Image (cartoon, rainbow, N blue to C red; front, side, top):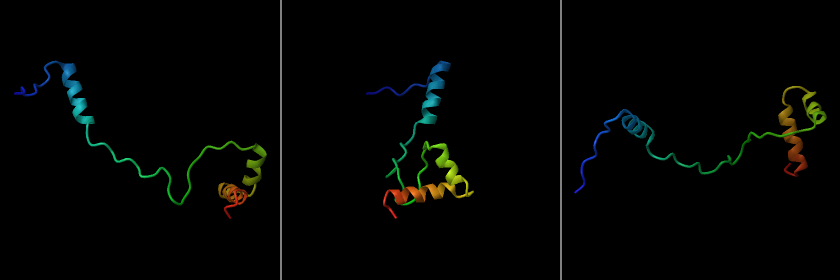
Length: 77
């Protein structure tokens, strides 16, 4: 026969028990996919300064213009 679980008697054991009870719970579900089927993904990319300035010269929307140029170069359009 198992003996009933005793309550911690010293401060360290009480703190560890409180932490364990506050942090334990059901595991979160894993995402089904890291990528959306359609959409955009944030990345870090190093470009030549001249290339970046070329796309930024026309003002806002430069990221979309870079994306369009890359899609064309990749043969996706």
